[in-house]
Length: 208
View 1 (spheres, rainbow, N blue to C red):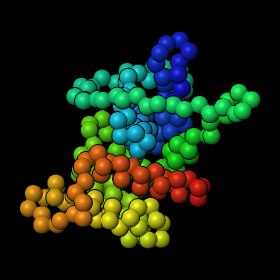
View 2 (view 1 turned 90 degrees about the horizontal axis):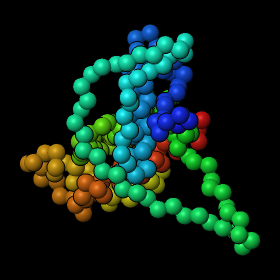
View 3 (view 1 turned 60 degrees about the vertical axis):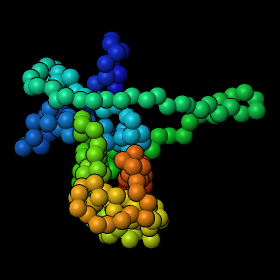
């Protein structure tokens, strides 16, 4: 994602857009990649405002294309986040550590499960319980079972996992008799699933 020096807009540049697979058009590749970017944005901050493509494309040979289609209705909330600057005793500023997100994004290119999870979270519409449970199932299938979350990997407690699954089932199935140890709100459920995705993506990125 690169900002244009001539306007307030950004442009998306990836080799997958310039050289898409035979069964995918360049703008379809761009949409897929942007879903992953938006998904990572929501993992980092559930109030993240998803960005959208302008549907104007310039290919590597300099030709410009415009894709016409109706825009989906969207409800967006944008909440600012505070930043902290750390200074040394002599007044010099301590530089921020490198962002972990580019490596996590790159990990999705070689891991279809992570890519799918990010694309679910990156959709333009608001994320709902069904989306969070879908992502949770992707993670548990990929790592070998939900018990690994609170066991070997220690990403969350068993109570947190049980509370999430029971709360999700109560919302998704009105006649569910499952009683959660503690009923979670949608915000709390989003925070838990986002934390799991972040830890999973970090693990995959570390493996290279």
